[in-house]
Amino acid sequence: MKQEIQLVVRSYECDSYGHVNHAVYVNYLEHARMQYLQAAGHDYPGMVAAGYFMVVIRLEVAYRRPAYAHDEVSIETEPKAQRRVGGTIHQVIRRGEEVLVEADVTWCLVDREGRPTKPPAAYDVRGLFS
Image (cartoon, rainbow, N blue to C red; front, side):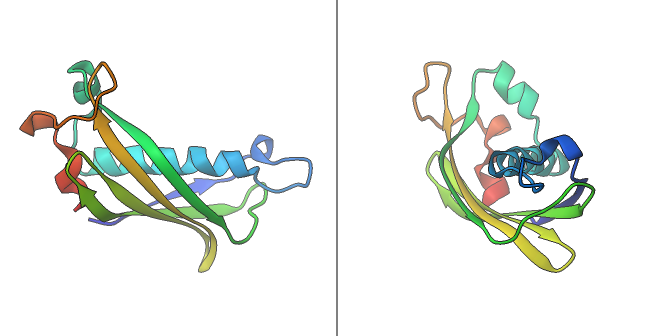
């Protein structure tokens, strides 16, 4: 499954250079991943309540072009790789056809103690990212 969402850059997300601060893009990517899970019908709040968490263990971001206040951007999210207890998600932020950011986000499922684990089938998100 591939999903695309739209956002409008808010002025307070910009730094003293007038463009989106690099850390804000990480928030955009996180928001898009949560939207991806919701669109796929995954019960993320239920998974967390059951004691399972998706944690980011590696984030590779390539900043290509800046975005500015009031720009309309799209964020595309799609699976890249699946692992035993996690996977990698590829995300692209664009303004129109122009690529602003590309990212690979590797995640792992952990239990309440922070140990990598396979969740019960009801909360197994790996299939969403295969």
